[in-house]
Length: 275
Length: 275
Image 1 (cartoon, each protein chain N blue to C red):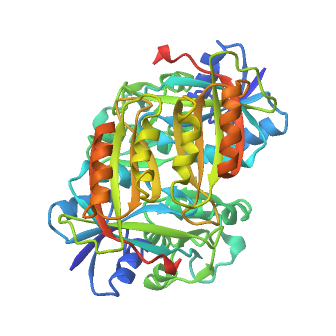
Image 2: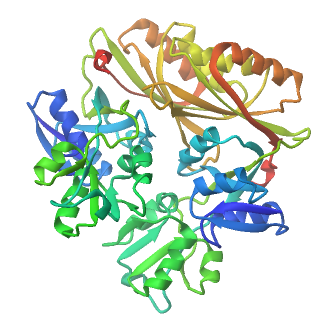
Image 3: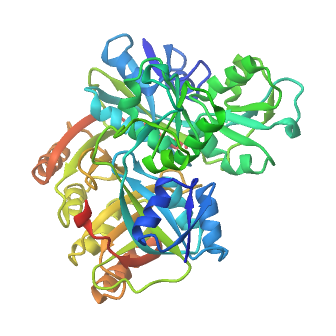
């Protein structure tokens, strides 16, 4: 099985793939999320791992937009505990650092730690593991990177500070995308996206279809509807699968109230005991 | 009156200030949103203009987080039609461009236009108007910036392409922050933030306090609660003011259901006829 992820080898997304399948998967690094979706759609790989939310920095909206643009299904989820390291060239001291580079999400998760480094500028680049590769290629001892311990090992560079994130409760939730739906089993979650008319109580009515059937919402996110200012797509995850008649009734009811509805997929719930 | 905004002179936020007060205001450029909040809190300025949402790119989450961290009130809102220009050094043709720099939000709003330029890399910098200043200082004819026509005029550089955004329905909503509340008048909006216990139907009950009183929600946004993975702060804007007993009852009811509730402010609704 081949799984695509965004970033270079050593990226957190690759770690999520390896953890989820206990290493029984070949990984394909992609330069962008767009490319991850394209490789799955085009059949180059079996599935893609996309980060959708981080417990400190919030949702990765680009991937919500891409889910809507592609005709793929969500077939699973994974939670990864993220611990960042500040990584430098060998022999560098903390006081030598003048610039820190990494993916904007990683920089956001280390905001306070970075602000505590006096006179240091931060610069977003396309990938965490890629930022380690870059400082190695640059060879400038004043530039450091923020990435995983595994990325430091892959590029043979020292960890200057471990646990560099602002808060240890730092998890990233991934969704697995594929061309074919899976059997989600008994302990399932379902992801959907819908749009509503811009009228009073529209959202209340939409959410009522779940509450009145005791279906538990686990996540809700809104994204602007391009070309219709101040109208939104709502992304909802809930407990249950589309094989359950109760869920089928809720979705039929939601269809009545919404101007657009798409089920992104039902999939096995990741064991929350690990959190 | 002095109003703080993020960016250099020529930034869209400064344009919003000047439009809102028809030029009757002195503007103070700030390098970050944090600094805008700090200047208002510290009394250096009377108010701050912060972008909270763009109709193409979505919410500016940093400012939602900062609203919660500071003890300021929302006293107004403004909608600005955003039209981006691709700006270069004099005598440069489109085919000469190899790199485009701007604020990440502006780059996100021109994503398709940028992708249509072959072999061009994009690079995020801290400000739109600042990116124009930077290409002037760099003097490299292969580097272009994305910013407003006014920024091009301020730095005396030519507009290579106007209307560079992907979709003309491109508006940014600003909120005005100050130390003292205002009288919001009859046509008001109110912004609040609250948190809920993580139990079934919690969000449904919270929204019911508005729906059952015919109070129209105009915007809802969720942000992660740092240190409590997968719990959220909900930011809601609704029609009406806290001077209205119907709104007072709704908020008293919401307080029962929520673990945290703060009213960010009631303010005059900006005339939506301009959209």
